[in-house]
Image (cartoon, rainbow, N blue to C red; front, side, top):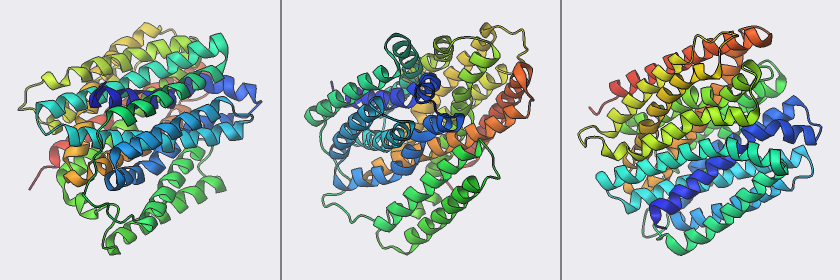
Length: 445
């Protein structure tokens, strides 16, 4: 195993852990006699950890060593996933999911930094980031199927136990096979106030968006969102006044950096959110089983993986921005093709849209990984990966909350669910088109 395969396998595992809960959450909640609200937190817990820790994890990796953070995070992923498998209560399980997100953040951010350092700009980096994007999609494909299959055969705990073992193996592989790299010869000073306020901001915003699915006017939702916005404002002020900030806000004047985080946010807001809700449509609207839902969704994720692996074959004159724009437009076409469902529709009606969306997600994911490391200085490539993926997961949290509200507006029962899905898929298509237009307009002056 080399850098590409080790980092790619770890990225895939993080996404497998992330998506396993899609098809096991109902059984997990039932085993603890937990409410729908607890099930919602089980679904959103890892997103909370990821969004809260990605930027800080990237900064730590650049400062203290990307391999070091990769290995420590892989060990933490193994421990937290094992805790999830052995959870005695739903509270402990949700806490384990949050810890899995924080550990996964370290793996993803440091992994992109390792790739950016090892492969110079050009075909080799395009190939490496294409593989990274493919592994992202592969994890999304495997997680729901693995979770549903193992849960049916051995119970829901078995999936997390197997994933914990995989994380431990990858920690050992990373320690043995990956070269160390960092942003500067001497580690720069850490920015504790910036790291703390960013962690609070992302955690509160993600938690608020998750809570909002059950009611936007509840005191908990309002307090969480207000606290998140206040912490975000405090973070911005701290980064402006500190001589050595965690995130140089001057990066926001770089058009390519804006394309990187904006494109990632739109991908999460539109495509990731829509595909996260698709199993609900398939199970409750089209009356298929949870394993079948995972298999149908794999039409999108496997297509995305296969296309991303071939993204490096595109002509070199098509830069990362162009590939992202093409990916967003293809994703928009796929989302549009997922509209028009009726009560009598078969699951086969979803296949053309899922294929198109997968063809779009492939080059988009590869381009976003490349933009993440090329839009920032070489000393901050893990931070760039952290910022990019923070935008993706915060966007998905917002997108899922938005799509739940849109679907609910369709009315009650099977007919209402399908009508609401049609509206949500159309909204996802429009968001992807808007993202493509903004990416095209945001050019170097």
